[in-house]
Length: 166
Image (cartoon, rainbow, N blue to C red; front, side, top):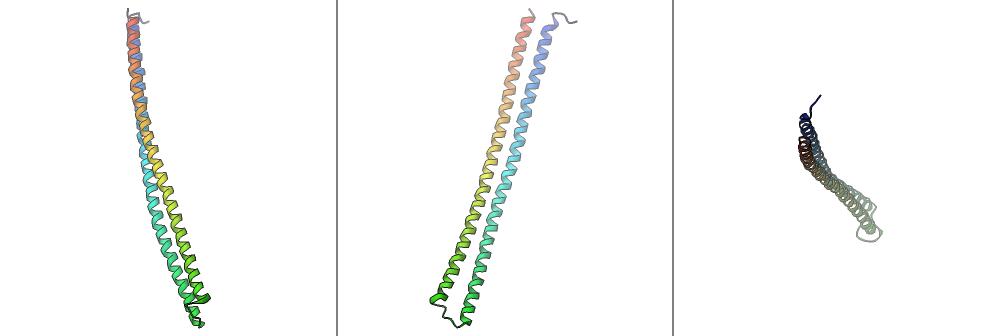
């Protein structure tokens, strides 16, 4: 059995053990926040890479559409000329203008879709960055909270030890 003299020692020991657990839990939360921040940074980098890839693909799609348009208009000119039609006026000239207009609308649509895709990736990257910062901040706050809780536990244990030591 423990005598009355051991009670203050037990109170201090219990306080130290509890305080150690609080600091450890705070440090673990801080490390988890750092890990989540690192994952979020990696995800943001992947999103930025996806935006760059979308831009490249969009440019390629636009070039391919312009080439297809040029081929289509060249075939129309060749067919019209072979048929003996005047290419500078009338329905033949209107056909060329309409073909060019539709082709340019297609290119504009490709450009707009590319812009929207890139914007989506940019927004995702920004969201990941903010999530990472929030996780790191939450982890740091948990660590600071753990230190303050541990300090309070130690002070409470010391106070209890002084009361029981009398």
